[in-house]
Image (tube, rainbow, N blue to C red; front, side):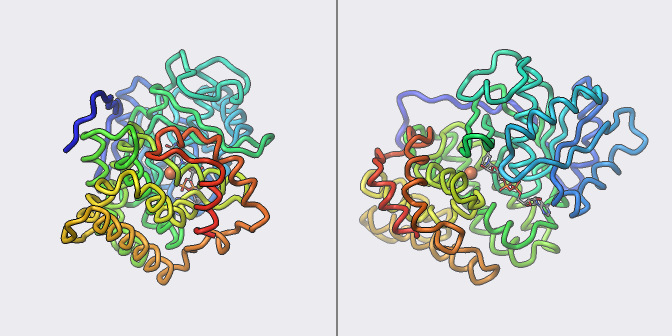
Length: 393
Ligand SMILES: NC(=O)c1ccc[n+]([C@@H]2O[C@H](COP(=O)([O-])OP(=O)(O)OC[C@H]3O[C@@H](n4cnc5c(N)ncnc54)[C@H](O)[C@@H]3O)[C@@H](O)[C@H]2O)c1
Ligand SMILES: [Fe+2]
């Protein structure tokens, strides 16, 4: 293991993980000195019947749910975050209970920024480490098994005016508590299961190879990759009944979240954010398509690291040359994508995911300004970004 000269690792929140973890939420609320929760979610999560489990857990308890905000849009948005902040005040809430995928969790983070920093508009607070005041408590209950937002210092929020995804990152953005319960992801449709699982895989793999890697994040990343190799296909195929696979994927997403929140991500995320902003490709779908191409791009600089990931993906270390073994890793990632494509039709080319050739230049323009590129092993020029996109197209 190569030790970096310097690194930091920070994971401040409590993690409550298990079958039946949801029932702990009211006591967690009370332990934080709170009484009145604002549930933040979206219509898909409500339609799947998941908020009922949460409401059930609060029955007869001292703390209550004041309101269920079900308007978190796909990819969150500054306008939804501003509106949620107003409602939080109106209902006299003292804690966010964010239930959903990254979109719902990040909408809660956005509203929390507005309220805690005393601003009237989220757009004024964009960037890194811009948050001075402490945030209000948040309990995050992820339902997709993907983003890891329940344990990250990030919020990715769509700017409706400028049509770009904005990144907020700060130590204060870590949710206070993450609650994982496999009941919450049993209803995720196969294609979303596959896409969000590949988002988690991308977090783990990019965290493991990029410039800010360190031994702690490496351990989380490898554990996440092992779980994904074991459970993602099962969760996609039999997710309604395979509780073990759902539980494994919920934990994989969390481990990968811890890894990338500290080590950050790279070219794959920069391009995926841009595909999301310009062509509305769902985040996990874009990452899943771009991951093998992003690994291949970084191969000249980090072949030994990519090679090391073949083991957690299930391969034996048989090639004496790290470059050959790294190619085994990339092949396994491609195989997983193809398998998921066969099971649920998850696209493996950008052209099948809503990207058109005439949009590639705009995608490049957005991607080259994405902060994730700072941590990528190799520099990425406009030309490089376009080449990778064309390969994945
Ligand atoms: N903050 C972070 O650290 C971070 C990290 C990675 C990605 N993100 C962001 O997260 C967003 C994507 O989040 P996501 O991939 O989790 O998807 P999502 O939150 O957009 O949800 C996708 C769809 O799945 C539905 N859904 C969610 N859970 C369900 C369930 N249990 N049953 C049935 N349907 C369900 C939702 O209603 C929605 O329609 C992107 O904006 C991305 O940029 C944030
Ligand atoms: Fe991601």
